[in-house]
Image 1: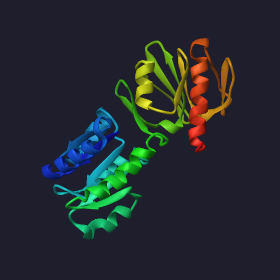
Image 2: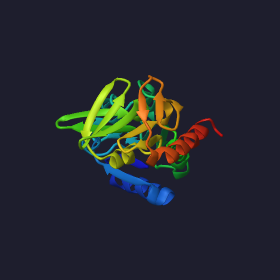
Image 3: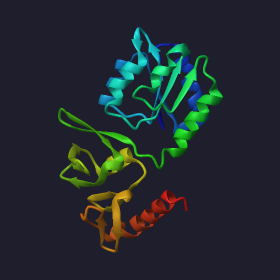
Length: 235
């Protein structure tokens, strides 16, 4: 889990960072930003967080307005707002469905209430990834990716809205996508949510695409598919 804390108060940053690391230990990474522009650059150039904890008033800027610019591309990302000015709280419900709201000084029990729910749902929740080729960067929702393909040092992301490419390895792409994708072949991995039928030598997707299943990956892929499917059904 990666938590991005955006607050111009260094003390608040440290309190949140220490609290999250204490709660989730090695399973947690907490990155802190003094300005919304730093957060924006981090998202554009590095890694996408699993949750943003955002101060409503950051410097002389309105944190809600600043986050709105970022959220145009990350609409499904959980956001927890924090504020020392409760009178501005009503604004967070304009164009937002915030995951939580904390007032300063931060009540850690309330913080954990929100972050525990985010952590618990992370395995089943679609995530947001960044795909970059040259100067082109695309933000993709993992739920929209039907399958990925490795070809000549590139990873090809086949999505509902089109095809996107980047220079990468299959293992690195799967690590970025986390849970939900099943490697069934040296050159293919599929999103289990888009699988219609799974047989010994092929997978048929809901859009009728046929994906090969190799002997090397066949048994483990099929077992993983049924495990993920069972969990999604609450079994």
